[in-house]
Image 1 (tube, rainbow, N blue to C red):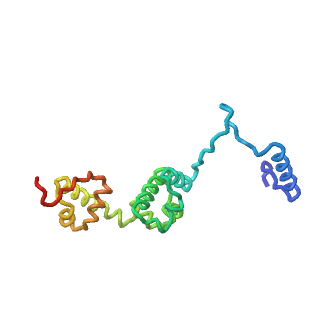
Image 2 (image 1 turned 180 degrees about the vertical axis):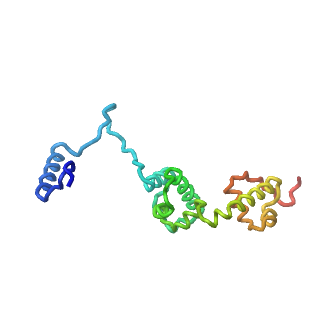
Length: 182
């Protein structure tokens, strides 16, 4: 036993300490933290000391509850993209975090986390091909080729082209009605 550590209180000592705390609270009320500089009670600042508390603070900023974000029913594009952004932000703040720890925080499978972050071996191998495909699609898009024609030329679906456009932030083009005079 270390001499510098207090010894644990026995049953009698613990009761005496509890009664003393209760008597103090009855006389003086609950303890308050006062900011001595202005004399006002301090606002409670959220303590961000773990990845979980960091994710919860991100949820508060985005006006969504942690339970909504991690729910198995939260599969809409809004939640999926929000989760992915939060995962990337968490990895940026905590670079050494493992995918298994992120999986516990976001209540997802570790393989899903690795895929989202681009750490999946399959995705890492496909990354150069995907990058080249997306550059080719952007080139065609900038030449005012229709999305259907881009999809046909690249051998991918129309919705995939739209997803690439949205993910890469390409400017949306004005819709022209077929048969409209130019």
